[in-house]
Image (cartoon, rainbow, N blue to C red; front, side, top):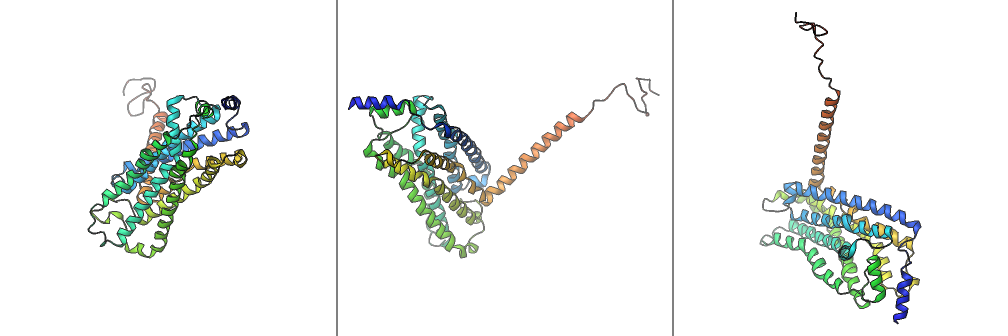
Length: 360
């Protein structure tokens, strides 16, 4: 058994992660995804944190939480995976490898659970606005919203990550994969548990919560006009984030975009992880396509937040401010470059003669 294993390790050392014909495309698209993820998520987080009314909304902190998870993908997960594809080996050390293993496995779990609890936040908000008397005596609304806010992080890093750490296989071939490529291979009896906890369950809950929110949005359309135009219509409310309808619509679209980006990759990963034969593995082009599309979820799912009333108004204000400052800077540079220094030897007919003559 040990001889066969050693042979497998030696033969695997010459195998490429991806073929040369796909490498340049994957590296280029990885760089584009990483750049867009950083820019879009930074803009969303900055817009929310720079506006006092948005900062006061517990709901908008769900958006910030999703933006932080997108920044983790844009700053670390996508660049490190792209580097692994480009270098054909792992060159960033053991500590960074361990960090990537954790972040790479929660790339789906964390934002999916955040969106699940964001959907629950909006469902609860709709029910409260449609039936204010039923929730009149419920004084722990903000506490409940805070619990919904931090629950995704507790579930991901408090439950999934510890289970992930103890599921690592210690076989010789798997250790070679880990050292050479920073590939993480689980023990087979942990496979179904982790697949359910970190992939199937989050996607299933997101699909259910999004569908329920869509039903509320569709069948509750007759009641939108009866609701307050603004969530800060109630002076005791902590939600000051524009119209309720815009937040519900943005949450629903963001969830659908995330599902659209991740569902194909989930099918490919599920089939690959549960397969015990190379015959059922997906083609390389299929895997790389679904991987690239899933990486784009970290910025595509953030774009719908700009549909929120207060958010796109704040973006317009910031854009006008930036444009005006750029124009002011360009005008200043133009005046400095185009103005001519005064010639002390040249006079005017009112008191100076040419060539430095005496005053008349």
